[in-house]
Length: 127
Image 1 (cartoon, rainbow, N blue to C red):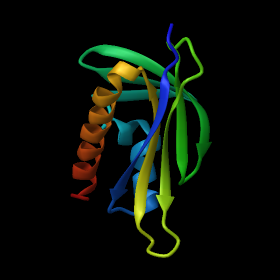
Image 2: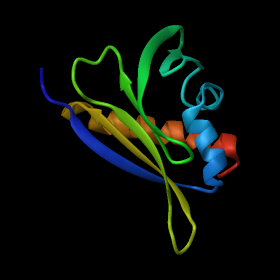
Image 3: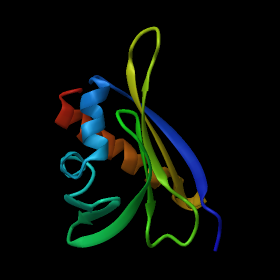
Image 4: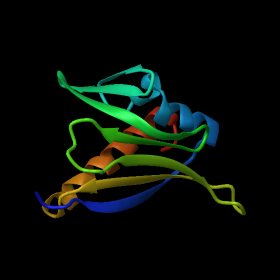
């Protein structure tokens, strides 16, 4: 099995950090843009897309700032993280996404995040 490659993407978001956090760290928020439906039991989140389910465990959470998940079916130590970054001077808000993918799927993975975050911006009215 080949090692996955870590990559980061930054998306400017016109939203308050508090509101944005609700959309990246709660099942109801995530189901508005990230998956068709999201359920959680404590630290275990179930993401549903077109009838298929994937489970992820919250491995780190900092209220109002970041959430980090590990897919349960993943055989390696990869994770995906969404972190809210606020520029100290301009107060601009960005969403920093950290994820892992196979080298030959990098373009598709980046495009998927761009599409997902575009949906998030529409939900937030941040277009």
